[in-house]
Image (cartoon, rainbow, N blue to C red; front, side, top):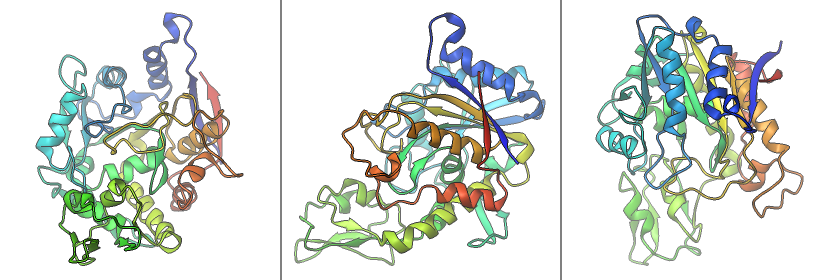
Length: 364
């Protein structure tokens, strides 16, 4: 079995080739009128970007999708969930303010922003999946209630998942706080020989699991650690770590099971668009944007998230490097994040029945 993935490259020599025109064409090919439920809300799942990040999705491009959903007689709303780590999206108020600052506001995008898991990330509905790691997963209330969903993902690298596309967007982005905690399920350790006692990890930890001991080094209270890994992000000497060999494969399975649960029961009413541009090493959850690793590739769309992410992954590998990296025979994401196992999300999602890694690429 193969799935169709539509592909628009980045070339633009006339008005009919603009990004907006290409997105409109992809929406037509996705046949949105048969994805949405007329007269009912339709979630537009996207990432509004952490404060300081500027490579998140362009709201002007999101507007094209919103227009197409409305033309299909549905009621579009933009949505995401609050973050497990501390930051500008840790609660719904801060998250909404960040979305507005990044242009997801009236006058730019003609759709409201609704934070799907409520004020503090507690609004959830258990969804039965009966998979290897979870019998049920905790999905944000408004994601479950929305009859249809269009998933817009910025395809880029990720420090824990290797890379993030539609599957990663569904998994973390549709889970409540407890759901995100269930997915991570890993506690960090501190290498005392590397720790410089700067205290950055202490200040950033949302659960006060990190503290400076009498030895002026950081220590982690594993009973409090929720595995958000924000401390690893701010630790310049890289003294904070996990057991990558044993922890990451299980983490990737848990993440994929959450993606599976996010669309459970409405598989025929979900479609996906990946924006393979600004392919940075880090997620848009980072409060910065590093230089891209390769040139922009294009915009891809499908009804199959597995085939879509696989196609994006394959196209990225064919691009010339912009960053100073030694691939050493590895794919670009593994070369950047050597301890990750990113393709597990593709193989395990296929095993769960979310889609297929076999695809036909149709250039538009």
